[in-house]
Each structure stands twice: as structure tokens, then as C-alpha cells.
Image (cartoon, rainbow, N blue to C red; front, side, top):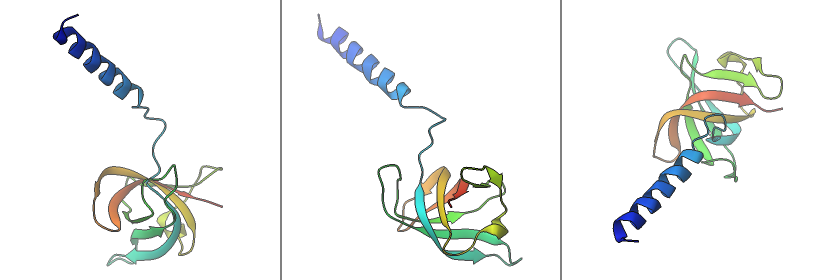
Length: 119
């Protein structure tokens, strides 16, 4: 085999493995932990939360500042009961799936796609 064919086979294998890792139903948990701060906007509505926890095998960060957008789903994990941002309280245990890019600071800043309240 010449070098070109070997390179093509290697690249095809890399692309195939990359596509196998793109499972949309298995979203990575950005952060899991306790809500340590609620931030309210001018209208007294909660606009963001600070979540602090431990870095675990299935989480990306140990601490994150999470913006809550109009698209953010807030549910009770296990029951899938829909909650509102007014239901969020300091010291609640939550896990958060991020939406869009993460702003790399410490703590990281991200928009929430879904906030799951843990029991």
C-alpha cells in the first residue's frame, strides 16, 4: 500500500469514530451541585444562578455561573415536572445542561438549556 491509501484509511477511521461520539440524546452535564447564589434583574426576576459542586466523571465543571434564558427548561429530575425560575432557591441541588458556547473564565459562564432540580 502506498502512503496516500494508508493516510486515507486513517482519516476515514478518525471521522467514523468522531461521528460515533455525536450522540445528541446523551448530553453532557455541565455542572452538578448546590445553588449558592441567585441573581435577580431589575424586574426582580431570577436571571442567573451560581452552582458549585464537585468535578465528577459525568460533569464538565465544578463551578459555573448559569444564565437562565427564555428557552431554558427547568424540571424536577425523575418526575419531569416543569418548574419556573421562581421555584429555584439557594442550597437546592441541581444539574445543568449547557446551551451554546461556554465563556471560559472561573467560574465558567454559560446559558442553561436545562436545569434539573435534584431531590
